[in-house]
Amino acid sequence: MANMDSDSSHLLIPEVDNEINPGPMNIQFDSSDIRSKRPFYIEPTNIVNVNDVIQRVSDHASAMNKRIHYYSRLTAPADKALIAPDHVVPDPEECYVYSPLGSAYKLQSYTEGYGKNTSLVTIFMIWNTMMGTSILSIPWGIKQAGFTTGMCVIMLMGLLTLYCCYRVVKSRAMISSVDTTTWEYPDVCRYYFGSFGQWSSLLFSLVSLIGAMIVYWVLMSNFLFNTGKFIFNFIHHINDTDAILSTNNSNPVICPSARNGDHPDNGSMIFYTNDSGLQQFEKWWNKSKTVPFYLIGLLLPLLNFKSPSFFSKFNILGTVSVLYLIFLVTLKAIRLGFHLEFHWFMPTEFFVPEIRFQFPQLTGVLTLAFFIHNCIITLLKNNKNQENNVRDLSIAYMLVTLTYLYIGVLVFVSFPSPPLSKDCIEQNFLDNFPSSDILSFIARIFLLFQMMTVYPLLGYLARVQLLGHIFGDVYPSIFHVLILNLVIVGAGVLMACFYPNIGGIIRYSGAACGLAFVFIYPSLIYIISLYQEERLTWPKLIFHIFIIILGLANLIVQFFM
Image 1 (spheres, one colour):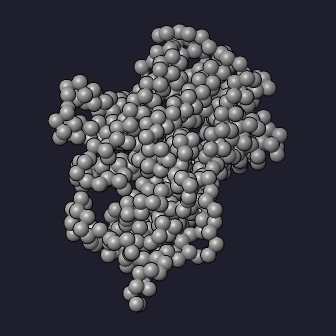
Image 2 (cartoon, rainbow, N blue to C red):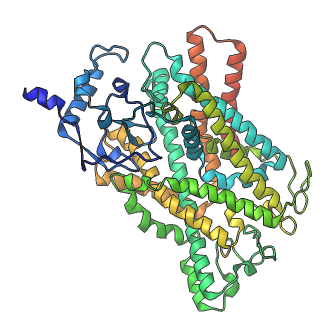
Image 3 (cartoon, rainbow, N blue to C red):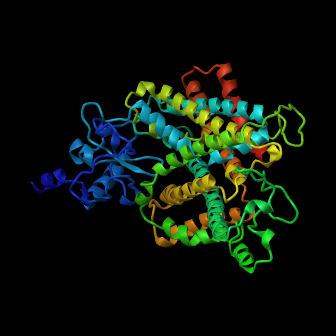
């Protein structure tokens, strides 16, 4: 009787008894197929839920999970002889499912068919996940490629990455000998390529994560610098557009990259050198020499938290920031008007040609901008109507493409040329608005706060993927975690000081991680599966080899631009 009582006891012990209603950001899972959710146990440090309290896992659940893991390794994955019986698996409302995004989502109990996400929710989740810092560099990428070429490249890259993402979604169905119901894309890579596939996917995933964290550090330094500059200028009634090339109207646009006189790019008020207070401010508030170091004291302690559940509550800020950027760009375009001339091959004083050979810089940025391939299976498996997965994925990619086109085209065509050249468009288009601009100040505040809450989440994901694979524990000790965080933060500080070019960082990291997840793995897996089924044809082989060559060329050419 004691054993039976033990088996029927709760395996997950909540800190509070009252169930909190699921929020709109929760991913909903079907609780009817609980056998597909093994193993059920997740360390409490992995649990991220935007509305629920953190769950504590009992010792009994921990021991049961280790038992299930042990027995599962004794036979092949297709052998169900040693699968855990139903009576040792907790009820649906007590289970968590771990996703490659680094989160553990609770299985919510629903009735009347409300156990999964609708197509609208799925489309919005994909759109919201893809929208990131790359959106700030899209106008610069269009400038590098040329207006006409840039628009064509955005649409073509959207189609290409959509097809590769489609191949990722279909990759599990190509495996008929094993039950792949609970598999994620790294599991598929491990099936086809063994340990090499597992570790290489881990490596490229870390490249995308650490690349994103470096970009975040550079942008946070930028936004914090401009925020402090705005406050200082407002208090002392300083007009910072006097010291830099800009338009002289009620909606000023500046060209920070122009070398006018002796005014450096990272200075603040060199124009007013006769004031000792301003000199001291410039000395201690410098975009590349001091501000990146100030962030260390604020963000390094947050990276050492065992659980990032608190920061996940602010995920909605990402959506708010993107919507505000759309509003900002629209309003600026209305006020500035359109400034466009077409010169196909030769540049002029104020305009760039429509076709430029620097267009691979835009393809590198777009590879990361359209990157969702490592977690798309997780997002789509919760779609209420699985037969609509391809349609919903296509709609989401279309919306992302239209968002990038809208932001990039409006910023480019409304950039006031003359008097400024289109070549003045910065890698972060917010840098083309002076720190005294109220609307841009609000955008920087939004983005700064959002990035400060997302940065610890990214650090947590890097910790889960690296330390979890090496040590089998996402928090082996404070020493291990601190060393990892110091390396990541140090890389961000160095880049913010010596290479604060987010467009360059995005295109390098995007081309590197995209080489594996976007171009090589989906195409190679499809080729191998068709070959095993004796359905491989020359046109399919040539087409997918061409995709792989494009991915390799996309990475190699970044180093020659």
